[in-house]
Image (cartoon, rainbow, N blue to C red):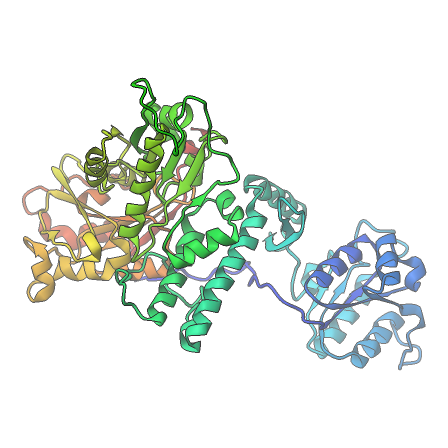
Amino acid sequence: MTQYPTPTGGASLLLSFKLHKHAVVIVGSNTLAASRAFAALEAGSTVVVVANGGLASACDELQWRANDGQLNVVDLDHLPCSVEGAVDRDAQALDDYLGSLEQIRFVCVTDTLLSGDSRSRRSRTSAQLIAHACRLCNIPLNVTDMPDLCDFSFLSTHRFQDHETGTPSSLQLGVTTNGQGCRLASRLRRDIVATLPKEVGGAVASFAKLRSMAKSSADEVNEEVGAEFNEEAGPSTPNQPVAQRRADETAGEGARRRMKWVAQVSEYWPIPNLAKMSSEDMAGILDGQNGFLSNASVPAPTSQDLPSLHSLSLSPSARKGRIFLVGSGPGHPSLLTVATRDALTKHANLVLSDKLVPAAVLAIIPSHVEVRIARKFPGNADYGQAELMEAAIDAARRGLTVVRLKQGDPSVYGRAGEEILYFRERGFEPIVVPGVSSVLAGPTFAGIPVTQRGAAESFTVCTGVGRGGKQVQLPGYVRSRTLVILMGVARLQEMIETLLAESGEPSTRRHGAAFPACTPMAIVERASMPDQRVISSTIRDIAAALESGGEQRPPGMIVVGWSILSLWGKGDVTVLESGAPERDEERIRAWLGEQRWRIVDGLDNGWADL
């Protein structure tokens, strides 16, 4: 049975190179040559332009860069040729010249451009001889408009700038059609860039500083800890379980925790907020002791009828603040209730948001409203929760209307209960605004009904992690029941062991019968968002399926039960009939085909218009 995707040719291995002063030779002196030269210069290369007619024939930009000392222009007509009467003097002279240079990274031929002057355009025969010479020297080659002679191709690229300073950032975006439509690639690149927040370049610059601060602190502890700060070699999810923070943790444990927090920031916080991080914000993130990520540059609302924190008002008419506990739904802005939208846009003076609330929801909040993002990082959730509640009380006492914004529904694993009791004890009765729970919306977006006649008569919801990171007891197997597990993907292997165990310690973490290994299981990541992903398999193969998908996309949820396949294709609503369990393996083969799992990427296009 097929386990992993079969490689299909026609793609390229996309890489990014630092050229580190290695030479790049560009043949031709037109505007395309100038564009290639500029890209190579920005990558740290030494650039040599070789062209018939030398500097005098070069375009204005190349002449300016040459006169400024940024690159060298060599006259190909004046280069010595070792073979008298060579079939193509240019190709032979260039071959001789390349042999005299050291550390050539690649050669780019631009004077074959089809749109150029046909009288000065290099012939295909000449380009073939240049290609032959480069390959003899093991030098990668790109020839414009002749893809069969190319060892590599250029992407249509865009380098982002810091939106405030205009300084080029380290963030680049590239698109390639692998020679099947270069102009279309440029259009697609423009369209992609237009959809990204203008602050994205500044966000990368800010995050680079934060990452450097975290790594420096790790390096100070010891080299071993510092070496662990490698994002590509790290876990595929920033939600990997972390022990709860202790007052007596070692310096090494603290350094590792800070690295985990940095990963969480990169995954969850909105791009505009990342771009606004100050040095104080970064220090607060790393020490985990105080402060939020806030749109602090936006002044909090002021009004003469709001009492001063330092004044004593005896007037019975003094305005009392309010606290709303509001559910934002699973993520898609269209799933906000009218009450939630009104709370955010008409009533809020301060929004205290959980980190999982997506930027698309935060974007509807008016710019004059202060928004603070929770720092409830792994191992620090309890402190982050207390920090949020204290901030809400402080603002409410000053007469502000505070919106505690939570993902999904506040009452479904959203800590609404403890916040209600905390606020009530301090004199504020919060107003709870329900939200669309991901318990129902997530499976629905994945095409999975939690109940379905003939497949699932009931459903159960549980969490994958208890208070303080402790293990929880999972429900046992009931064929007619769908099990939904929130906050369990990071502990997937532990979940699987618990569900399957017939005896031993894992079975004590389950209340009821063991699950058959062939039971359908699905992981729904970023439900309702454009980058939603659904990984469907069986309990026995779901871990391998998740690993095959590469980097995880938190937040994710787990769905277990026969309702998963009930609406796939022609559907299967016979799983509760007499004798059905004996056909389960056959049922799974009909569902998955020759594969052991299925991965569906993206959201139904119909939602793009909502």
